[in-house]
Length: 479
Ligand code: URP
Ligand code: ZN
Ligand code: ZN
Image (cartoon, rainbow, N blue to C red; front, side, top):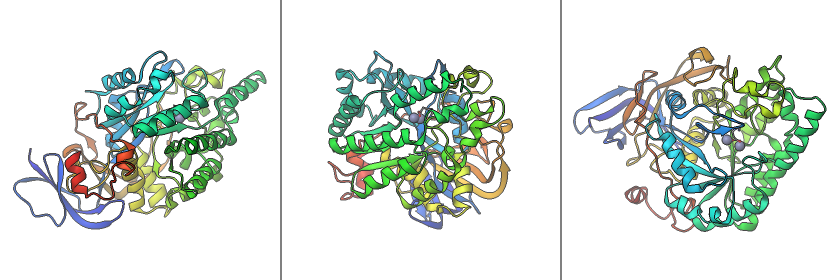
């Protein structure tokens, strides 16, 4: 394979911003900074652009069954992801009721292999927590699936009770896995949903009323308490507002290993979208729901201060005309989820970095380095270092554009960020040294993406095999 020389850009990592080049051979970064060419190379001129590690979205749902329908699939959505600057996703393999974790992992690998434009890892979600299923967690870890998801909501579908959450935390701790939770009190949600429905309150905006912030804060508190009892690390996904975020801050302050993620929709959209005229609000139905706009600054500050560690999209895309319309007369039947993977990097750059809420390095940390570390992909992914996979995003900060469904690549008849103005765009995207986006256009293939096994949390975080005491090179040799 010819070498690739990315020249003249501004290199951005989670810790540094400096002018320099990147030299790539055999899909791996060989030199960073002042490059000494060691032969012929394909040159990419990055003058005036930022060169950063490709974004890693640790929270996607590709081709996921939900409420009797299925979210948009791997092929279109991973191409859209690549165009938007994402080079790895970590998707949720959902256990079938009556099925096993190994079956879920195999099912998801079959969905993805040969149909993904970018690399992917998997989490596994336990929905039917029989003892033999909990006992499978070490096997999932052996297969490179080291994050286990528990839904505390979606009663009757994916929700499990506190016994199962606690058992999962205990088993995951032993196996070196990290438990992720969707924190909402699913029992309270169903009661509230039914009360609203009986009172003839059936429009999309009642989705938010059935899932108030306290429902999320309570579940967050409970999950943190159970993790403390189990002495297990915990990752809380899609944090929407101040109160649940403060639970995480308090836990971290006590020294508990609790991590938190928020999503672009909670930073940039708000509950007023659910009350749009007609049935338009259905486009914005996701769980937990969008909150009052006053929570947004608190989330940005939590990202800047390190209370929250990552931004993930929770990309779970349904089209409006057929799929969202399933809940035309009953908000409980609207499939939950929003799109966002095509534009999230531009949105975070524009509304985070350009508006002074986070630094450029912190953006890279939040959308690439921290996800890689928490998912057990670091240092193979999530940084620009010698020996790492050459997953690069060359971002041109000049120019602006308006997001519209008319020009998007996501397979949906709407874009949740329609009308948002964004600054700059991904110009080049490289996946293990292969150019998959060239001057903004997708030039890759659906055979480019590969499954990447994740390392156990315990190893990545030095619990059993101290990472800090070893050199990056030694880690890479092991990987
Ligand atoms: O509304 C959402 N977030 N849909 C995807 C499933 C989940 O809860 O993450
Ligand atoms: Zn969720
Ligand atoms: Zn999700």
